[in-house]
Amino acid sequence: MASMNSKLLSTVIALLIVAGLTSCLNKDLTDPSAGQAALNDQQIKDYLTANQLQDKVTASASGLYYIITGSSVTGRSAIGGDELEFTYKLSYIDAITKQAVLVDSANATKSAYIPFLPGVVVQGLEEGFLLLKEGQSGRFFMPSSIGFGNDTRSNKMPEYSAVIFDVTLKRSRTEKEQMDDYAAIKNLPAPIDTANSIRVYRTTAGTGSTIAAGNTVTVAYTANSLRGTTPFDKSDSLTFVAGSGQYIEGFSTGITRLKVGDKALLVFPSVRGYGVQGSYDQSKGYYVVPPYTPLAFEITVKSVKK
Figure 1 (spheres, rainbow, N blue to C red):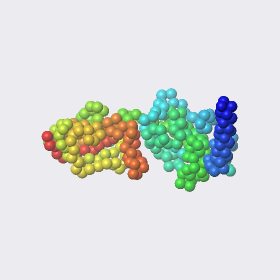
Figure 2: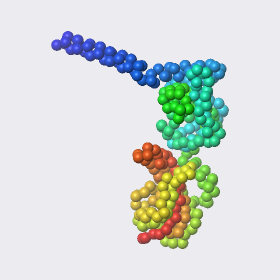
Figure 3: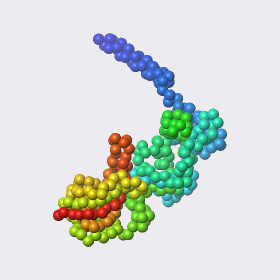
Figure 4: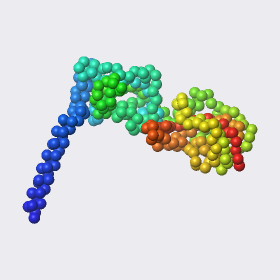
């Protein structure tokens, strides 16, 4: 019995080895990405050599090559959950000429903004941001495996291109800093209330009844992110019970600090809004409100019933 089991085990191992080899051969024959990592790596090295940069780069385990410039003794590093403000250019390396071909320079001098969360940018750029401090610039050379894969950026570059990101990190801002900057840009008066991190800015004072949790309130509102130009939600007449938990806390609780006739701006962090999960529209396939996004609600209180 023992010898039969050993023979059976040997046969199974042999079959697994053959299956593994067959899988590798099939991958080489059918998978267009097979071998791209090594090819991209050579393309990057050829570019670095052609431009006398081979002694200036540092390589990471992921296949990223990078050059960091600019001293930043006091600058903060990019932190997950912060909003990053940065400028960038994107190029790909032409395999024949060994030169960089510009793909996107729309934000070469104009700031771009993103919530710094996993998956928001390609892996190579995400890794690159973590190497920067505010005020520093980085040149990141990345293979397609941590870049855009077979994405051609709307036919602006070949599939599986090695790419170059030229990036300057301007700021990494917490939600509180975003809210402070928003108040300064909007020239808002001092908030009348800041309890639970919900800032209430009254822009027009009403003369009607005050609102308490449990009251039925009718309001007009528009909801936006601090950097948004188009409201993600609005209503000319919404009736609901204040403080009932029916809506996000920043909106529902903030209302209880107002009175009928008030026009106000409620500004609050994501912990009082859509939190770490954000608000994702499955039917449209995108975030209506990204995770870690502070919000601003413009409110007009129309009526209240005790």
